[in-house]
Figure (cartoon, one colour):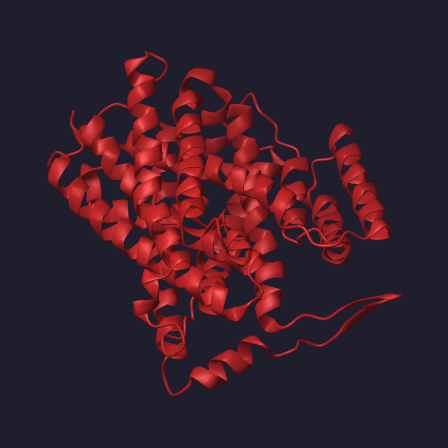
Length: 402
């Protein structure tokens, strides 16, 4: 089937990008703790040329450009994928949606509660309560790729859908809890640009360029508004039209849907450039100032246990209860033991966790401690998840058995 082939290509791309993401993270760690450490940090804080737009100006360091600018493309892609799934994919079928929706919600709530249990007495640390709430789809699917054809396609699809819903929840959390002082004029300009994109959509305009140009303008005004600039990517992604009713996924290049064309063009750039650059800019933990022994302190330990234990407990418990109650069905080839292994892999937070940590903590020490917790949890979740699934998966996936 064309859809099946498209999904398999998609997951191969995600797995490959996850391996590159891991490599970029290791490189950042090596650079930060080598003789080039000072040069690495100086490069990240290098101020890019100032851009003046009338009375407005944009001044960003290289790291801020990656986190606020390039990551807006990541959020644009996430929003496009969510919209497509809501209109014609897994998020459009209530019965199919129930399992990943319950898993994602519980997989956000339980880690947040565990983090709070460790850090409730520290107001500064509590700003990062959302750090352990999201799953890194690229990293997690890269771990599934290690197991090869033994992994049922339904398990990959369930994991990716949980991660997409996670991302949607994270977007809402960022908008509600990580917004600084608001600037009225910029907000009004942002609303006006969003309304213009909505009118283009309603008028049936299918060319991508008007939406992308307005998206750039939206990013500029949102950057100055006090709302995090990456949310401009989210708004743009949701306002680009998607034409449903035909087999769009069979050939995105021929699809009449601007949204699918955008996904097809943007996905490789985000997977192979944006996310590795983000890892290079944010994964450079200086172990001389934040040694591994710091894991025993409340902030990193709260992040570590929230991801390593809270994620699998939250996801598996609600899935098991939902199945017992007859509310949800597991995908073909997935039983409780396999689902639990997938839930362990959902403890790989990484990209979104590091991103939220950069928003939550302005103090370098707190951000470094949160990063340490994310690193430790992601590595342990990856190793334990692969080990568990290697034990419980059949030697050959049911998807390949004829």
